[in-house]
Length: 115
Length: 113
Image (tube, rainbow over all chains, first blue to last red; front, side, top):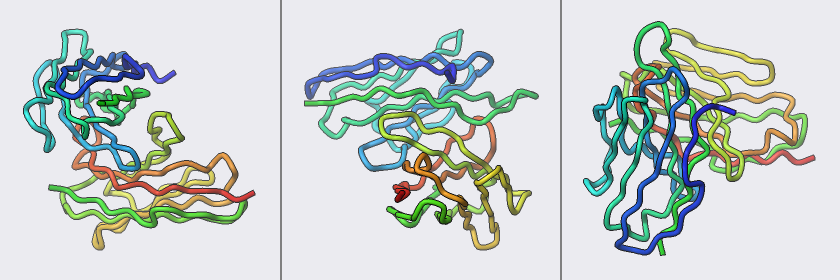
């Protein structure tokens, strides 16, 4: 078990609805990044949170937003869902500072289907 | 921004033969190049990585080479086994740690028994 957990594992939503996805980072990791992986594609960077602040954002509209909590867990919120938002959403944790510098550890993802 | 291209998109090799997957990147500031293996319905798993101060790295049957001048890096799998069948992604980042990764489009590797 990698230590990065995501919930829920699967989700079906209707176009126009809002969704919240959750991620618990691996112990000792202070950075959480979110990626969207459409079917047959590589993961695309959405944004990253470091010590509760957004620390970089990819080419995604403002209806994609996030939060990081003091325990370094994170949420991804998507408003006004569109059919193209159907994808696997991956959370990855890492440490970007100090001697514990580490690469990414990915969670198993949340499969979101928008109908 | 960074752009990573990956080839081929699909690759079939006989069990026991070698497989090579190639990636090119555009941003000369990129310094960290991981490779991920993703089995169907599962998370991407890091299989090997290389940093820009190293030209080659090997871990048992897997090796990665990096040519910073040409901005390309490759994954080599020798003595392939059926369990090597998966989708492989290359990625590039400016820094190991919490810098974002830019992924390639993936290579579906099939090992033929």
